[in-house]
Image (cartoon, rainbow, N blue to C red; front, top):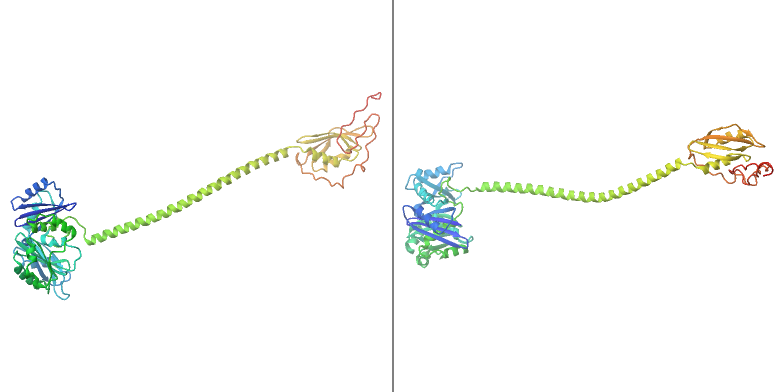
Length: 491
């Protein structure tokens, strides 16, 4: 809700603008307790208002265009206060004033537009808001806020705006859409107003008007006045903003000029150019320099957050790539671990096979080696193998010659007789024992070439069987038991 309070000679007018272009207007005559009456009206209409913009009637405020010397580094406020004494009818120390610079010639003096009001008038305007518990947002001249109801873009550069309200006519002079000066004159006919416009044009230094706008009470009469047409400028209604036009149409027709001024105050700027409200009562608002600094801080913080976000996004992407690579490596690692487990299992199996082979006795290679080493006339009755020793027993023509033959084997060492050699009919009975040279497995024995082995025809025949012995086996050098002797009597 936007609210405006217009204080004038006949009392006060309060306008509240709500959503949906709804307008509430409260008009009260002058009284000793306007604050209490305003509070009662607001409570009865159930209007909850925060801050209120306050506008003063133009005739209650002194508005002047003064010239000041161009002094670099001088205190302009003190210069204006010193100059005020010639333009206001009250002491400068009792004045509340504000000033804005106007365009001036490059080499000429500085031109300043000032608005000054007696301090007790400012205090009375603020006191009106104390009873309804309202806070002032600004305090300015009401007609200075009329441009807030215009379209943003219009072609007129030098404009005189005539606004009638409550028996007076306020004239607002606009240059390029900005306030240049204002006057308050009696609400005369077109001829008197034309005279005032001619005088004001020379004060402003203008040669002509681009447009003359008329609004407020009895506006159609002034629009039809031929005296205003002598300036050669079009005389018309102001180019209202479409939204402002809808709000003006919602105002009551009686006392329309005063209600329009209150509406303009409600739609006024947050920081009006000529704000007479004391600094201690003004709402805190940022200056352009503070806004620029805050914008730079926000921009810097945004860039910092964007940089951090970009780094975080890059880190997350890099982490995601690492996770994907880790997952692929995990699959490969599981395959490698599975292969390693299978390889370890096969190694253990191979080691077990080797240990079994190493611990086992290779009887056939040993038997082959002994068969090749023993002479053709030697026979073995028994061959005992264990993990430590080898025991042989049998018959030979010369048993003592067997020891060097067996020690030349790559399998055996420390060959010795375990019992005395006994002599039979034509052979010596022997019993030998030897130890393994390289363990029971021993070195592998390469088979002798077939050409180096004596064939069966080359080997001598076994000794003939006597009456006490069985015939010798046909195959030479084979391990066989000795046949038992026949019993006496031919058995």
